[in-house]
Image 1 (tube, rainbow, N blue to C red):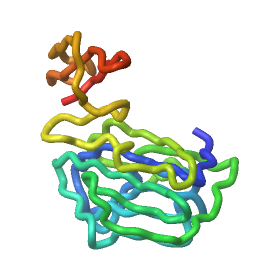
Image 2 (tube, helix red, strand yellow):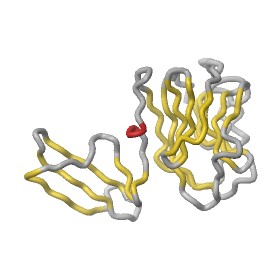
Image 3 (spheres, rainbow, N blue to C red):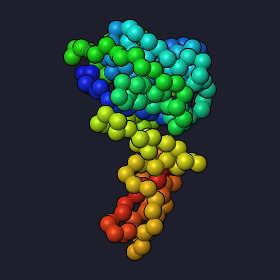
Amino acid sequence: RDTMPLAEGTIELWVKPDTNNITQCLAYNGDSSTSGWGILLAGGNYTGLYGGKAQFGSGVAPATPGVWTHVALVRDNGTAVLYVNGAPVVTDTTNPNVPLASERFAVGVQPTLLNTEFFAGAMDEVRVFSFAPGGFSTNDLLLNYHGFYRVPIAGLTGVYNSSVAWGDYDNDGRLDFLLTGYNGSFVSQLWRN
């Protein structure tokens, strides 16, 4: 895919690496050697990278092979924050070089050459989104709550005339929880396991 002109935005994903001893591109917007920004697994850690300018997070966000981890890189008002399992682990104020229109957004591979920094493992729920400057909230992230994560459309609030159901709504072999009802407006929420 062509690069996305995100000045403010988030790249997030769930990742379960098979190994942590090689450099692996998780998701990147631009050319990781000269421009753009994204998330890498490097030196055994999840890191943020501004192509050609800065790599941040080394030594503070260890990547454990075989363990599902939520990783997000958020750029808001000129500051980048790397989140691991919902906790901010490092902040950086370097401004990345803007990606060229000819560069790519890629998942699981270095976006320029498409033949290096392959990701080895499993990924789920890769998501990229933008927001107005200052408009980010950690409630926007797809975080895990004791085996369930909430799709960020609404909180679980008191509802009446409601129905609940268990089912495998996302076909991953695990039961999910669906709630519908009314609390002054109609409510429909999916809690995925």
